[in-house]
Image 1 (cartoon, rainbow, N blue to C red):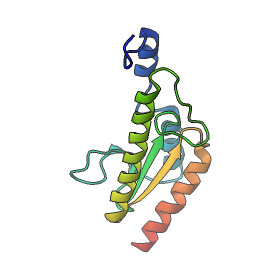
Image 2: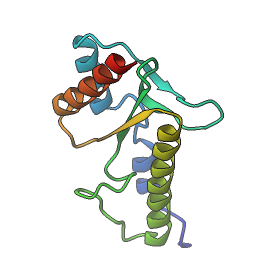
Image 3: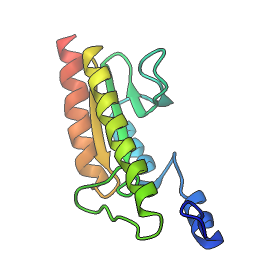
Length: 140
């Protein structure tokens, strides 16, 4: 195998990973909706920036991103693959850098970004998000 080649089994497993409407996203959206909040899903908060928030509260200017532990290098659960380790480390580090850049761009434009790890309890994340959205609505 060449350094970037993967086995069919690994390729199938990686390609089957959902990038949207994951279990945590759906649970979180249900809780936020039940709490009276209305939002948009999978929208770009800033024109000209090709990055989508998983949940977007436009008038409050809050963008929520649900980050997978593997793909975004969770400090608690990240694992580094042994096969193609340089490739995967570079990819995950680029994801982390893009996340930091996204947060900075949003802050510069007056948005608040919330990062929710896939391992977080949706109930706890919903409480955090609800408090932020309500406080920003009260300010503006």
